[in-house]
Length: 573
Ligand SMILES: *[C@@H]1O[C@H](CO)[C@@H](O)[C@H](O)[C@H]1NC(C)=O
Ligand SMILES: *[C@@H]1O[C@H](CO)[C@@H](O)[C@H](O)[C@H]1NC(C)=O
Ligand SMILES: *[C@@H]1O[C@H](CO)[C@@H](O)[C@H](O)[C@H]1NC(C)=O
Ligand SMILES: *[C@@H]1O[C@H](CO)[C@@H](O)[C@H](O)[C@H]1NC(C)=O
Image (tube, rainbow, N blue to C red):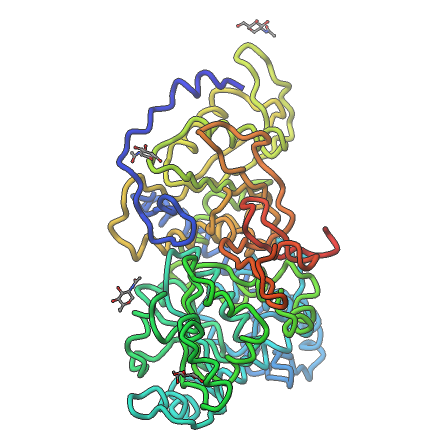
């Protein structure tokens, strides 16, 4: 490997400080920034052709024009083919398999208009056959949740009754049939995806309905996930100040506990119509009691819980004894929580799906193997860092993810069987991709493999158009999830989303100290779950501080953050 040359060609990082702080927890400098110019014309032309092919391939199942008339709902909510004719029976058994795959092993419900969200129907054809099937129980619970969501949907009678209580002067003791979790749009895109999954799991566990604050761009990014009813919080939601709730709000559960309001409630007063749950990385001791069983019991009677978080708080839900059995049934393979919930909830909109499919078809589909490398540098300056490049190369070459290159005067045996490896690299800086691409151009790989390196977007400076910025960031996370081998950066929510969606244990680039290449440069993750960066360290039973990473076998400290918590599959530990 010709490191000297690469070293020389690195420019010193002199760009302005990276101060994009929208990401929240433990993020000393900016999360990924995107946008910048992208190969527009080429992409449009090349990809349009690719996309036509793709459409032809994935819609084969739909060729029979009468298909739509044949499908009907069964009790379980699955689509079934009601085939009377022999020919149709044959078609039926063939499409049985396709149907299973199309709906991700029964994870997704039927009953959507396909054109409204192509990714929901087409994603299966881009992914390797999934080895992580959802449990029957999870499927049943999701169908049950969908029923509940429809019953309590925005603007339904039950919703209106529940919302009525939030109006000033109406704060009474009325009981409601529907209770809700309202998710506040907060923090960077990666964090938001992690908290959406966390809030949804909490809603599942507590028989609540999840409604989401659309924020600036939620509807540009994600399709509606539930059939027949919206998950968007209506714009006339009566609790108009909910977005301003913060750590010091008197309406927060933590502050109510602190001021002893709660104890009075539990004794004699009816529960308040709503409560604010502050679960952001900066939350206090009292807020953290949310993760205790007794407190969960108290919250049960509150119809509206308004939740703000920038963290994947699922691991701490696994430490609440009353949810243990249910979680075990939902996720017999425990480290697939985010994997299933993200695939269930987070479907790219048609615009984002276009970004994903055009890029995939143009640059990745033709390769024999796809390698995803996600580089996120926690430095307060932007630029290309030599220690990071060296770390990436050492990691990928040590682990035989990418081949070594031959020295200038070495000859490499040319084989006829030329394997093509496509590297999808995401980073704020374009330097890493340029240098790695150049290395494999100037030197042959000793394995004889061909290496192509692709970076969808890079943005050295603050993004101007936030809308496309997040759409591209989402497309990049999704593209990374379509690779065969994944290398991610420590502490990065962007990487967590990619590994979870893809169902992969990534190689994690250890966080460098003092701009030195860590040894080892990377570690194989013990599970595909995201890390909870700000968990409580408290034993609810003894009411003392305790190491929550040592309480149950399937919740451990993270590989990339010693104080973080993540769910692991017990069998693999
Ligand atoms: C980066 O942070 C260090 C301290 O952590 C500081 O000394 C240095 O000036 C900062 N650089 C820039 C460009 O802000
Ligand atoms: C919390 O919100 C209140 C009201 O919106 C505001 O006055 C206060 O400054 C905020 N506090 C913090 C810590 O953000
Ligand atoms: C709660 O009860 C305590 C004593 O029982 C009382 O001092 C306090 O004022 C009450 N708080 C509220 C908000 O009612
Ligand atoms: C390649 O060149 C280096 C010096 O540039 C020399 O030390 C080495 O022996 C050469 N290797 C071969 C295989 O010729």
